[in-house]
Image (cartoon, rainbow, N blue to C red):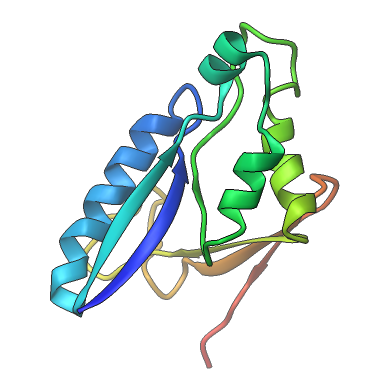
Length: 144
């Protein structure tokens, strides 16, 4: 069985909840697909910043660089100035030369859509964002 070690920065606000549910899905699919995941949790986010006075250390960035993937939740909290804790993402982007944020969006068969009269053939696109947050582009991938 293949094992993947994936570091996790759960983040703030809804971040930990979303990460927790995403991990449940991955952990449920893993045995069906013949792999397992060893989740390695990193404390970075607002709580860590308020307790330790650091956003993310060079040591943490060096450790994260040992892995092929990183699972990150929403980051940011009204207890600190806007953008301060978000700089975790900026530091990770620069440290690992990450310049594209690519998100696939597809409605699966049998799942009701909140958009009236739209189904899986209508909702199948990719959101491509440049990681400096200056550009957001969505385009439809048409079957045909």
